[in-house]
Image 1 (cartoon, rainbow, N blue to C red):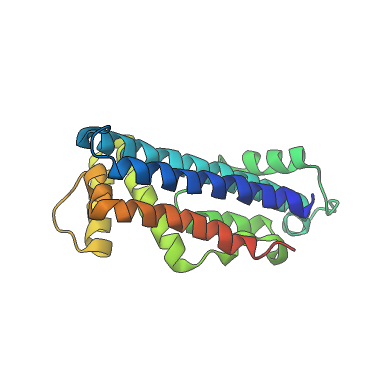
Image 2: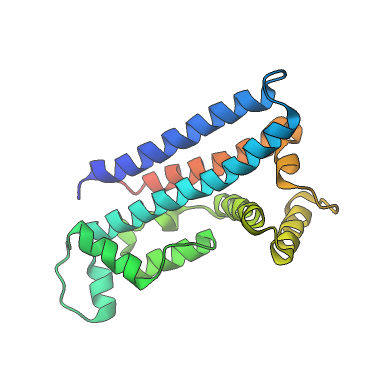
Length: 202
């Protein structure tokens, strides 16, 4: 595993987030081509895509970091494993341990702490305010994925705690208010997480 491999993970993820910021910014400010109802559909679909891209990035990063140094994993299992297992085996270890569907940034950090030595664990560098924003996006994503009562109550609680909104708003309407600044702030949180994690690269 080379430094370039980890950099590649960050490069593609940050490029995707930057492109989404550009694309959604153009869409939000369009006056004639995209109708207001279409904007809501596009923004809500984009939330699901952003979370999928983040999960793909996290999975690659976890596998590549374990590939860099699996000594903590070896120590935890009390096995005499080589420090550098091949990447396919690292992937099997992580996927075999649990399906990589994360509930929160804390959930990601917990798994990373379990498997990765500190010097190859970039997830510990994600700052609390950044993690909070990402978790808010997941609260929105969960509602959009299920539309269930529990997901709706959690979303309303997030609106109230983070934005002091007493009345429930559909995610598209919520994200498009203030000229889409909330949506941009959420995308920026994912970019910030990647950049905070980058500081661990040698």
